Image (cartoon, rainbow, N blue to C red; front, top):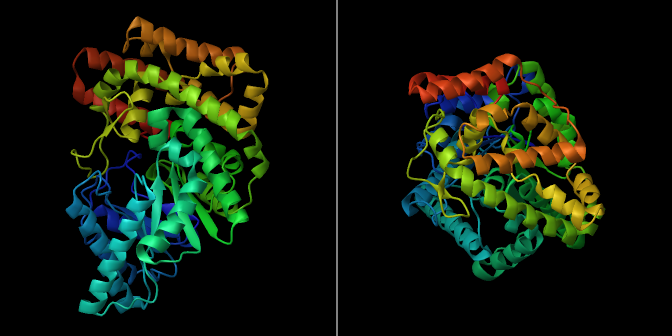
Length: 486
């Protein structure tokens, strides 16, 4: 299975046009020893993006000039729009682009470059069976009309992006296996299952989403140990703690915290806002630790952890409801680095429209608050309920203290209080004070200098003076100093 999946997330400070993305893809999959980025899978993203349908074919054709073979040296794995959330024609056209691209892969290399398709925001087993059937239908049509060879069908990868689905992942996979048999007569023995940190974090908070992702990885391993089938977890994470903290400064801790993954997403900020030496060390560490068996005894405290997760989500959502207006305002200053569609929106649990995860995080840092801190005072409730709760939580989420340490270092409450009302500020201050009360001054794996804090203050001043162009530039400058946009 591929270990490193390069993606097109707009979390770096580098701007890409759809035309740039073909060259980018080739550089992503050229081996490290040849000066490339060493990934063995490239996600071409159609979810909420204005990606040309010809992009997959263009990558295949460009590969001819670089001594790399799609389908052997690397895979191209498109993420197609979910027809429940985006236009149905975009969904069908993206599937068709993926299937027809294999005609060119077979023509030039005698391989299938596209062997998997990702469906984002997967919700039900019936929905997934319908999409897999749709892929098979398109493959049959292209095979009949244009001589596509069908040695193997393109398999669907469900991408689950809610903590609820993460915590029940084993039941969902088993249900999906049965739905494939009943609905389309497809007997699958192996499943690649994708779990995403960002959306679950934005909607339920950092603690809840972290518990959910960890539980999903463990439950997928337990499911395969209890059955004759195989699962290969893919984790989707970015550099900020809220989005998974897959960063060069905690690479060794990261592979231990999320042990059990088979594939990890290598998002844009890790590729383009990281020094080459650190990048190489990070992706090699991630690849070398892929597929290691996690400690399944951690699931012994499953019910305790689930109870803490939902309590943490409740506290986080209370805070989010008060922060959302400020986040929406700040998100308008955040650079868009990929050709995204403005029509594709997400809503918070409170019902209010929210920016997507990267702009959400960028907005929070630009206001002077690390987003993983929001709602963290819930640990006081955990400790009061049972002193053992915090011990269980910290054993389960081994990276949590460093997540908070990083975000504490990049927070400035003197700046943040200028963006929110007094009650909201006091709630956030309590979150930070509670962390310090229980864990002291947590060290940060990376520390900003005084220049960073001065730019945070300048950004607020430029907003107050309505100097918007300078404010937008400062948001990017702060991102470059952090090592990620959001």
